[in-house]
Length: 145
Figure 1 (tube, rainbow, N blue to C red):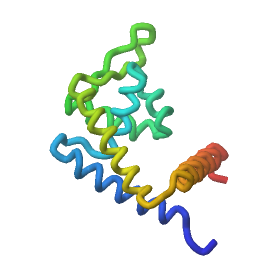
Figure 2: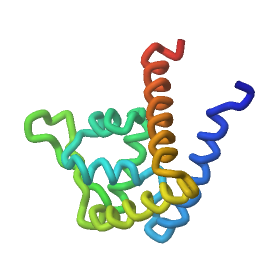
Figure 3: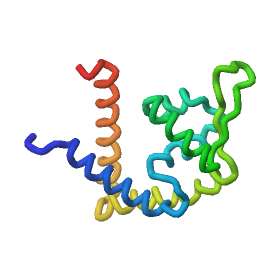
């Protein structure tokens, strides 16, 4: 294989971030913050560690994103009633208000990416991307060796 799969994934990722940043610019929310909002909408009350795990993100990235989302009023942190070392994260009303728009934006982006695809091609693309993500996760788990 002469072409790099990573190059094309990277190009799609950069265009995706540009599109999403443009769509949410007036809310001061960056594309990198939106996955955190989406997961908290689906699973309210996660700890930062659980959120990192759910998104396959490192803890530093999660902490930085949550700090910003709390500052902007999209997320609240409340100390865990059972284990005072942890905070539970929840979306505020402002955070929940973003979710329908986020879902519409992600659906639109998926439609853009799959323009001209048959349903079979679309499913194949999804299956292949999922497999690549699984391969990357397994490689990371082996210490990138």
